[in-house]
Length: 102
Image (cartoon, rainbow, N blue to C red; front, top):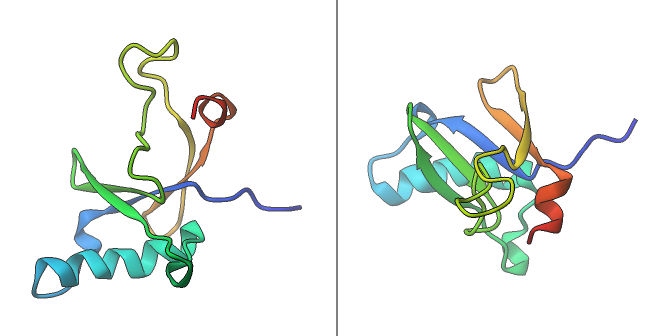
């Protein structure tokens, strides 16, 4: 059975390590980018957005949102199907409606 690609990741903010802001950002990207399939050597990167409850929402597109935006026909509905991982992260696969809304 082929596994679904991971399009988004939510991790606890407590995973951040390092003495400077850049160190803390890099500590999250070192974990998130391989999971998201980001290839920095080819110019790819992941984008981190803080969420309520001490969580970080991470994708490879800075325009991505957790839910469909205000004014969209699917406003407020989840753009990802989420699965909890044993490490405390949540891994999201973009729902079909969101793939066509880009």
